[in-house]
Image (cartoon, rainbow, N blue to C red):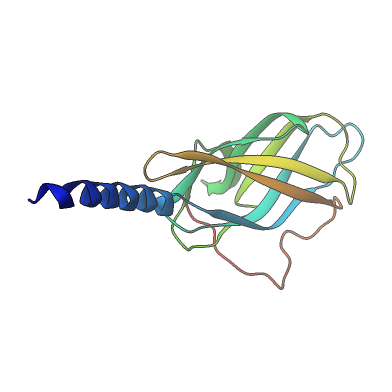
Length: 162
């Protein structure tokens, strides 16, 4: 290879490599984020939202100043009984809407700092890991809905998968 072309070629390859790495990182969007309101003395509630990632990724952590403990949870039928359990991660397939909703995947907030009233806003931080292992945070502002809020807005339909 002619030495005068080697340096520009290497520089071009390096830039393309950086661009492809940046493009591969997951961009996660959040829609319809909300938290179910609580009553005095209630120490736990759920947060719900719809997530969509541009590339394959997964939610590997959640946090919020509104509660001492914040975890991803799943509710599912087990031998005829609905059970809730924590999950280590939640897969976000590229381009697929993933619903966190009552009766399915959700963010569980326990040991609440204070009661959550209709109209309050709860900050939630999602930690997302892309296929290359890069982690980023997604900041969510979830509005508190009344304790009696329906499980899902009937105008919105989607899927939840892991």
